[in-house]
Image 1: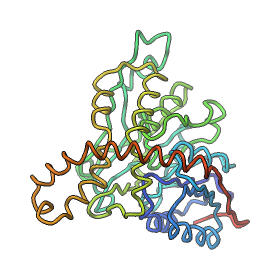
Image 2: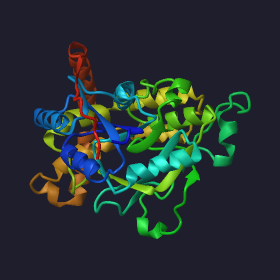
Image 3: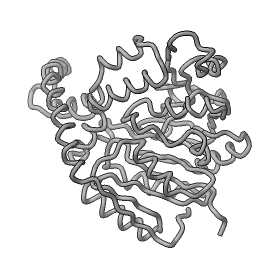
Length: 357
């Protein structure tokens, strides 16, 4: 058997309900030999049983905690378990296409890139609408100057741009080429494991947002390449009417996208990189909680008699609910902070059989 070059580290993005579909897609579409580490942060009982059974049957390692994890915390736990040349970070709501992993590895071998980002689509139907085809936070020809503390004058200004976001994939036919890019997305990304010997572990003070840009900036500052590889294609399943959140997802989702975690992440990102407090940050402070509106509040309001049949009444109801929801969210974060302090433990389930497609 060929020795795997890659450890696939699966972490839980924001929910649990599509776990089985995503894991089955991973195995069905991966021909490249790989090891698998699954970081299971307090998944519901039904999902936990499924992952336990799959770890036993397929021979992968499952690391279980009895508390919810921040994204970078979970990824660092996965890196600690890896021994291969590469780590592929993927989230538990991703659907894959044949060749996704092999094409990332080939790109990394040919370019010596520290990060290789695939073409990421979003939503349903799968693989039809672009989410991320590379991106930048400053013009690419100015990145080295932007990241150099001595050469950058004053505090930096960030201007995030995702290529192709929300556009039909077919509209980009023939225009997607391998190229150096500003940042990856953690929905799916291949990373050389030894880069962590250079830059250290992922920053766990980045609790829930902009951690992908922070990581990409750290890698570029270390003089390493970030490359976009369009022949690798996956789709991220964000919560919508085709794949709504399940009630068992709510507690994690509300914490993952809490006002507290978002603001702490943005403040840390701003201060760490000496970024100016521009509209980039102010707009995000003002819009904290928008994912909770889309994922939980609005779908529940739409189920109400009478109100749910009128878009106008739904908008009014959401606007009235939001102040109370912000208060509830602060209580939710505090409640889980107390619980997590009492349940800060983890266990590892492994099998002597290597994972392979």
